[in-house]
Image (cartoon, rainbow, N blue to C red; front, side, top):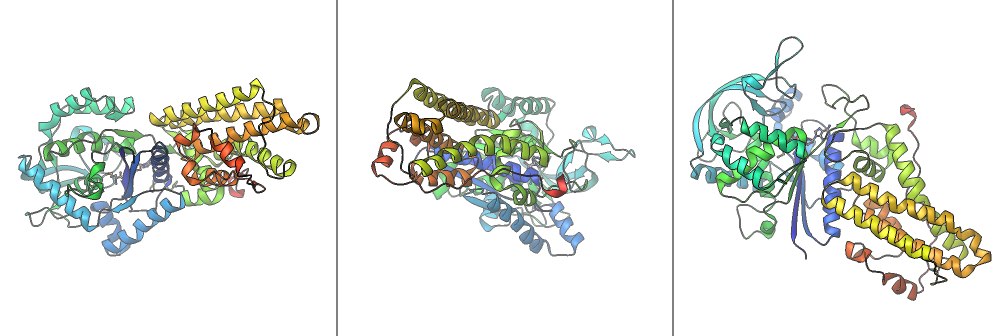
Length: 520
Ligand code: ME8
C-alpha cells in the first residue's frame, strides 16, 4: 500500500433533494479519489450528509414530519444519487451517527481546555439558509430594502445565551498558516478572498444554540446544542476514528484534500483550522473551493428559484459517464461553468463518441472481422508507430500531472490530444487498404492502435469508470493491470498475445447522444 490519501467532499444538507451542484462535487472528488488509487495511494474517500441545524428542523416542521424521520428519508436520496453516479466512496457519513456525535463531543472539550470557549449572550443576524452568523456591516439591502446576507439569503435577528469560540485569537496564526502554506487554499482567487477577510479582523464566533435542540448536545452544558458548522466540520475527523488514536483509519489524518464549493471556503479555511489549532489537532493539507455550476441563463441554481436540475434525470437522459465527462471537461476546475443539454450532447459526441469511442470500435471491429479477434502480430514496424506511442505516452503523462494539480479539464484536454493523434494515425495508415496490399504492415498498425487505446482507456478510468472498464474488459486487460504502473508496462501485449486469447466482437461503449425531446 502506498501513502495514505484522504479526500472529502462537503457533507450536503439534505433539506431538499440533491441538485446538480451536489452531483458535480461528488463526481469531481470521485475522479480524484480514483486517480489517486491508480497512482497507488492508499485512499480514503468520504462524502455524506449534514443533518443537524435549524434549516433541517424548520423544513421538517414545515412538512409536518419528525426531524429524524425527515433526515433519514432525505439522506437516502443523496446516497442513492451517489451510487447512481458511480461514486466510489469508502464511507457515506451521516452526522446523526453515534460515532460522529462522539467525535464532536471530543473536539469540544479539547477546545475548551485551551481556554477558547466562554459563555455569553449572542445578539446578531443569522441566516438559516446559510446556517451562518453575519455582522451588520456584511449585510446587503434586498429589493424592498430588507436585510440580506452577502449570499443574498434572508437573515433574522437572534438573541440567546450561547457558547463563544475565541476566533479573534487566531487571526495571526491563520495569516501565518496561509503564508507558510500557499497551497492551503486553492484556487488563488479564493485564497486572496480569505486572506482579505482574515486581515480585516475576526470576531469571536457563537458556537452553540439554545433556542432549539436538533443537534449534538454540548457536553456538560444542558440546553445547548453545537452550532451546526462545529459538528459538520468535525465529520472529517469522525471518518478517521477520532478521538481513538488506534482506529484503523487514524493514519488518514491529516486529510489531504477537502473539496468544497466556493461559498463555504470561509468555514473550511478560517473556522476549521482555528478549531483544530485550538484542539491541538494537525491541520488538513489543503482546501479546494470549486466553482458553481449555473443553468443555461447563468443563474445560480436554487430551490427558491425553481430551476433545480435533477441530476438523476440527466443521468437517465445521457448516461452516467457522459455526465461525469461533461462536468470535468467542460468546466475549468475552480471556476464557474454552465450546463445545458445541448452543451452535454455536443461535448460528449465530439470527444467521447466520435473520437475515442469510434476509434476503439473501429479498431476492435476490424480485428474481429479480419483477424477473427486474434491480437495482431508484430508485423512490419514504421517510424510512425513509435511516434504515435510517444504522443500517447506524453498525453497520458500530461493528464496525470494536470490531475495531480487538480487541473481536471486541462488533464482531459491533454488526454484528447492522444485520442486525436490516434485518429490522425488511423486515417494516415489506412489499415483497411493494407489488408490486401501489405498484411504485415496492417498487423503493425493494428497492434500500435491496440497499445494506444489501452493506455488511453486506463488513463480515463477515473472519469468514466463504467465505460472505460467495459472497454478494458473487451481488451482482456485484468483489473489488476489498470493503474499508472500498468500504463508504462509494455510487456502486457506479449503476455496477452502469447495466450492467443481471442477478443470477443466489440460492442460500442460510448454511444452517440441525442437531445431529449423536451430540450429540443
Ligand atoms: O454547504 N454548483 O451544504 P450544501 C456547484 N452542509 N456546487 C454547488 C452548487 C452549485 N450550483 N450549489 C452548492 C453545505 N454547491 C454544508 C457543508 S461541510 C462540513 C458542510 C456545493 O448542501 C456547495 O458549495 O448547501 C457545497 O460544497 C456543497 O455543494 C454542499 O452544499
